[in-house]
Amino acid sequence: MLKSFISGLPLKNNEAVKGSMIRENIAQLIKKDCPLFNEESYIATGELNNYRSLYLKQLVQQEKDELAQVELEVLKAIKTNGFWKFNLFKTTISTTSHNT
Image (cartoon, rainbow, N blue to C red; front, side, top):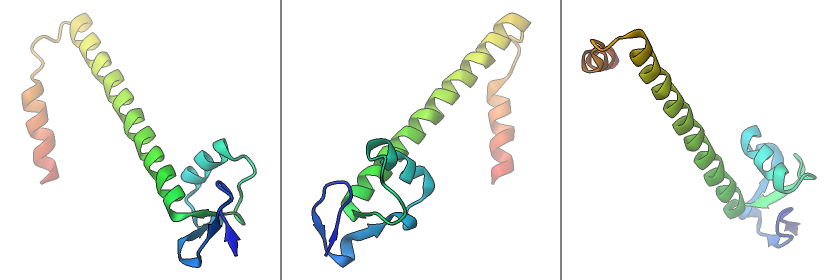
């Protein structure tokens, strides 16, 4: 019977996921916690879902941080370069109208 590399618990065939089937970004997260995890290792579907959730949380946080940085740069540019006439609403409308 297969065992989870993470918990050591036995796995049913329908709940076992082989390391080679896991996306590299998620596998890297698993390797942070379990450095010996590899393509031949198995984990439970629930364990994989926990790492997927963690990956998505980190991705959203990274995007949020990048947006905050862009916002600060725009505000700084407006303030330092005197772009007080900058029409953000018009820019937003023209940007969104291209997507439809």
